[in-house]
Structures are given as structure tokens and as C-alpha cells.
Image (cartoon, rainbow, N blue to C red; front, side, top):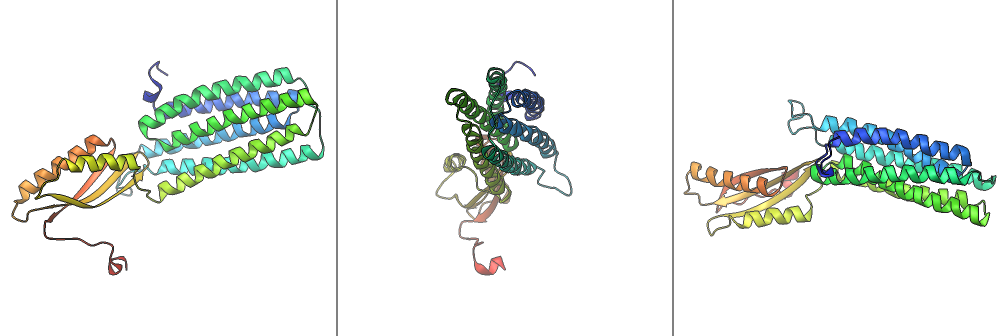
Length: 304
């Protein structure tokens, strides 16, 4: 990976790095659990297994999303990334339930924790690696508008907080001698990652349901259209949606019926170009209408 700004790293390269880091952290955290017998560290290791599966699936979906449009998918494959986010959310929920089950068993049958020094050192080391990778992935996700990359990055951030909570909990067990703290921390960790899993699944569902563009993006669109407004030109019926990294806006542009088709088309082309320049990744569809014609799409008979 080249030594350039993280936001310019390609999503595929970062997801491959995420897979490699997941394998490394699974080894470190599993070793930490094995030498300490801490159920909190076991919970931490289980979440890293989810990291591995989700990163591999995210890489697959990002690869599919980059495919060009074809006869069966004329609008492209961009929504494939939402499946990655939803799948990752589901895996997180399953991992959280598994952690709760293991923690309850340990609450019922407490066990002492051994060799804390090595175990905590390995856990902290894996957290530092995850944190550095998550930071780079978030920078790139914002640049490339990749929900799959963002989902994997946010999961890694959750993993870092999970590890921090486990380290604190295990250290408190060593200081206080209260064995119940270890499974209690594990349950707290599980609830935290359960919340993250539900959040990712919700975000994925909203993307699949053609959620509108972000308010700040719509504000950019409105500002751009305002530069073309004129007593003879107006815009209405503006609607938008997101599809993976792509953004779409549809609107009507009203102009004098006396204008020639060539003149109207030239103005529309200028508006489309200005919109796509103002909002990266935007695809604008503008329908031309005479000033005295209104189109109604919200009438009940139109929905039958």
C-alpha cells in the first residue's frame, strides 16, 4: 500500500488489509484468552471472528458494486454494498448473543483468571492495530462514499472500544478479586456490539429503500439551481435517492413554450453539468416542461 493520504487508498486494498489484520488479531486475542481463561477476552476474540467474515463479504460486495451497468442491471450494481452492511450487522448480532451465552455460563461457574500481564498486552496490541486500520478506512470511506468500507471501519472502532472495556474489566478483577466482574464486562461488551449491529442493519435497510440524499447535499443542489433561476425558468418536483456511492436527483425545469427545442436542451445541459460538478457522483435527470404546464405524480389514480 502506497504511502499516500488514507482517504486516497482504494476500498478494495483497505478491505484486503482488514482481512489480514482480522487474522492477526484473532490469533493475538485467542492466545490472550487461552493463557488467561478470561471470558471477557474470549468475547473480544469472538468479535474478531466477525471482523474476518464481514471484511471478506464486504470485499466481495465492493467488487460487485464496481461492475459497470449491463442489460440486466441498467443502473449499475452500486446497491451491493448495502448487502455487506446488513450482513455485517447480522453477524455482529449473532456474535453478541454468543458472548452473552458464554458470559452467563461463567457467571454460574466462576473461574480464576491467570497470567493477566501477557493477556492484556496481547489485547492492547491488537486494539492498536485495529484502531490504526479503522482510522484509515474511515478516511477512505468518506472520500469514496463506500458504505461497505464505512461499516467495516465502524465495526473495527467498536472492536477497539470492546477491547478497552475488556482490559479495564479484567484489570479490575485482578485488583479486586471479584470473579463475577469478568463475565459482567463480557455482557456489557455484548450489549454494546449488539447496538452497533442493529444500527448497521437499519442503515443498510434505509439504503435499499432508496433513502433521500443527505440534507447538506440537497442544500448544494438547491444552491446550484438557484443560479439558473430566472423569471422565465423555474424548477419543481425535486426528488433524490442514494444507491451505494451513486446519487440521483430528478426534477422538472419549466421554461417558455416559445423556446426552440435546441435552446431548451442547451439550458438543460448546462444545469445538469453544474449539478454534477457541484455534487460528485450525482446523476441528474431533468424533464423539460412549458411554463404553463404542471405535472402531478401524487394523485391517487397515478398510484393504481
